[in-house]
Image 1 (spheres, one colour):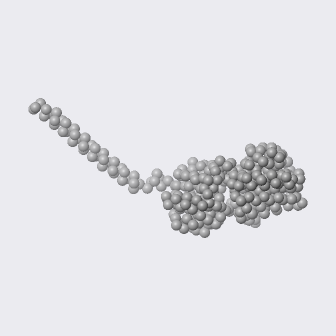
Image 2 (cartoon, one colour):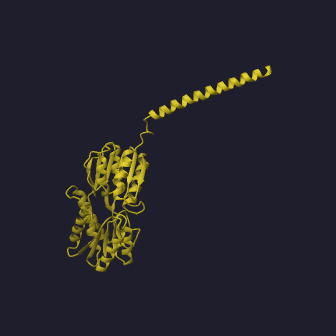
Image 3 (cartoon, helix red, strand yellow):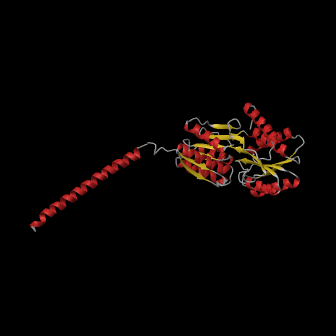
Length: 336
């Protein structure tokens, strides 16, 4: 038995040493955890951004442009990002409130449909900034971006009239107030280029109303329309494809859509969503994003034409470019 004493003493020493080591590591870990909890450095203050879309991210137009643009901004500024798509009108308030309640710094609703719900939520969450498009922004933590669409519509109207052989041009749009300024500009452009041309307007209920948009396209073609301007987020692809079947020219919208039907898309009026988001984030990060209504247009490079198709003659291109430069130089004398 006496021979066991050295072993027992060694064993006791090892156990006590191990306990001291574990205890020391525990207190070190707790100290580190306390430092992490109380540290308000860059890792805990990363900007949290949410993008809300009413349509799919694959529409090759309004919604997909927003997703691509904000992803580019995320790479540049390093914020955390969550994207919610296909949100119905009656879901917006709850979705916006969920993000605001979870301390998101910036919530963007990519369309006019988000404006009113944001207004109801913004008042309850003053530390969150809400940005929407083409609506109202009565609170100090709200901004609404408005595109100056009347002059842009006039350029499109001129192009449509100059490229029509039948003297009949069509315009498919959503029947909402923000769309009317561009329609007014379109009419003015057609009449300036071809005073006797007939303008056929086709209105649909919302930006995802593909069925009615295609029906309007068929009715226009049957009426003799040979150039159609289409301004729907999700129905442009279907309208352009339908027009192509009848060898009818179209003018795309939001993004460069000539790839859909290269022989029949004259050009696209691009709403450069990337440029728009670039301005929004540069101003927000510099704490210079204005509250209320902000207007972007041709002068800011937010609206511009994509490259023309080969079917557009040089003289027509020159006429459009001349009118564009006129609008840019007289910025502020027209409204949208």
